[in-house]
Length: 286
Image (cartoon, rainbow, N blue to C red; front, side, top):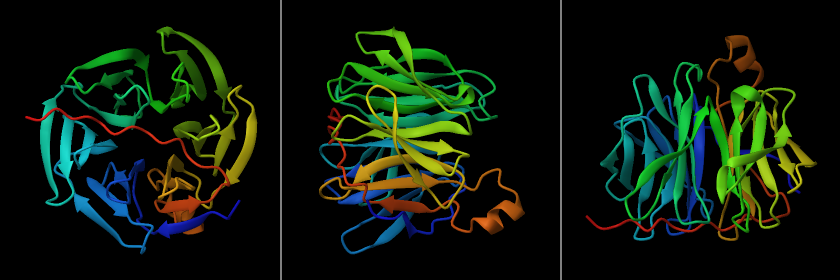
C-alpha cells in the first residue's frame, strides 16, 4: 500500500461526492458550499473546475456522456464540454434542505440523500432515481444520510446516519430490515465505497482516517490522513486501483487550519486492492 498524497490542493470548504468517469478519464468531485465541480485527470495530471449555478453534492456518469447531478433543486444533467447544467427533474427537498451523499449502485439506479443544511437538525431522506425517470424516497428519518454503497451481490445497502455515528446494512429486498454494520467512537461515518473484494471503505469525518471494513463489519485496515475531516472516498483510475479521498475545512478554527494546511484537498492512495466497477446511468433522451 502506498502513502496518502495530496493530488489537488483544492481548498474545498466542503469537498464531497467523488465520482470516477471512465469515459472522461476523470475524477469529479464537489465543493458543496463553494458551488463548484472540480475534476482531475490522473493520466497527465490535468486539473480544472466548473462554477455551478446551484449547490450540488453527488454525481453519476451517464452512458451517453456527461453527469447526472444531485442538487438542492433536484436532478440535473451536466455537460463537461460546455459546462452547462440543465435541471432535468425539479424536486422540492423542503426549505433549508439540500442534497448530500449519492452514488450510482449496482441496480442501475442513482441513490442519493437530502439533509437539513443546519447541521442535519431535521431528518432528511434517501431517494432512488431510476432510468425510467422515476424518483422516490425509499428511506426516511435519517438526519445526515451518508455512506451509500451496495454489496457486490446487491443484497445489502450500506447507509450511515453520521449524527448517530452508525453504519447500517439494509436488506435490499426489504429496506425496512436493517442491522448495525459498524459504529464509530470518534467523529462520524461519512462517504463510502466498495472494493472488488466486497469490503467497505469509509471516510471518518473528524477522525483523521479512512477505514476499511470486511463484509462482517470488522475493521480490516486504517488509512490515516493528514486532515481531520476526510469526507468521502471513491476508486478511480483506468484500473480502479487508486482510492481518492475528498476533505473539508468547514467549521475548523484558524488555528486548526494552520495545523492542517491541506484541509479541503483531494487525496489519493493505492491501497493494493481495486474498486468495484459501477454501472453508467441510462438517461432517457428528452
